[in-house]
Length: 561
Ligand code: KIV
Ligand code: ZN
Image 1: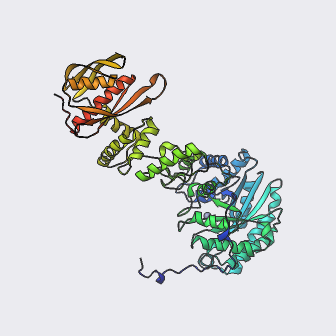
Image 2: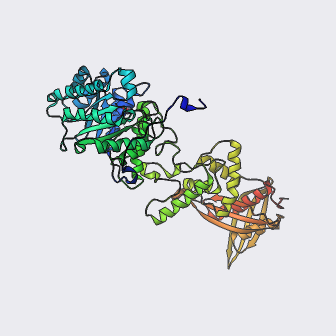
Image 3: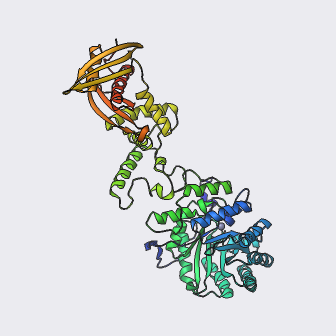
């Protein structure tokens, strides 16, 4: 890299726009959308889609609610031509969907393009030629006037062939390609020259698409260019002003949103931003950005995972894990404080309803078919809140607060040692290992208690260091009787300080889970957990779990003789 980049690169000149309006406007409605997945997106694939893949994508786009779909460049290849014919001849285009085709300003290509459309109900013919100084100079070696004539000739060749499309509703579209790198005055001049040929009216408008073919400036500059065009071009009311942004500087979404503020009516883009280089605008992003502000995008992404699957299968591309809304990790919180905040926010929102107001989640993942269970996974940075949330949401294990404080750090240490994040099932296995699977030094074989008048007697058979031992005890409940039985048998003194139980699962499969905290003579307070179909046995197991943990983790004075 250069230490003085100005030796090689120059700043982008600002647009002379007085009385700029777009910064103080807000978006209140969705634009007209046009998907260019099957043309711009497809052109950028290492292996372009075949007809059946394009058909699958077309159906998926229709299902999302796209009413304008650029289906290809029919004069560019036989596959592209065949695809058009297949859509039309097999009547695969719903009545309310318009197909769009792209063509350069060449007579033979226009001829073939028109042929590809015969019999369609509604079409957009999209003519383009490149207009920027670099394209004029290096690619075409032509002056502005020649470039303008090229556009006018193309427009005329299309007009001359419209009689071949009788019975078809035809909308005409012109793009001064590389618009954002073109002088606005020349973009206006060439667009008006095309308008002179096509003669659009407020009743039969043409589409003027103003592409950010290569993103060369900040999004506010693109917005200025759009507002300048909307303000200065003649017969604005006969035009549908359309945006088509790419993402070379990473601000394709911003450029589109500011371009809409600047007065555009229509947006072209692709699903998940597929397209040349850094891609086209990701339409999902702009649509969902509107949605999160309470504006209906008129596109349905309720099953975004399903759509992503179709897209990945057909294009061979993958959606990056952090792509807004659609990426795999978008609704996953790794940091403990985020997890805790999400948990609190979700609980409050579920209770109170009202506008969505959950920290760290811009939308409810459910709205786009994502699951709450995807929200939190556990890594070594996850706090106790995240661990507890996962156990509760996945398995219905409702850890008491104080037990969360005990198990959270233990889980974090175990995950740290593994050096990776763990799944919910792995987390549960850790919990089971820590609390449920300890059989040393105490393992329960049998327990029975009965009582009257608040006095319970128990008989238990317990393996202590592998030796079966019979115990008896008395107390004001079965658990108290068992504690006394243990202590009668020489287990040093402890008392029960907390107790909680609830059912796990439902119906015949249901069991009970019991959480018991004991206090040792040295003040340590380990927890124990027991599960059984019998609630009494779950509690007895929880007592032994706490005692075994005290011994095995050498927390205190408990030692079996
Ligand atoms: O990026 C672009 O400029 C295009 C045009 C053909 C509209 O794709
Ligand atoms: Zn493009």
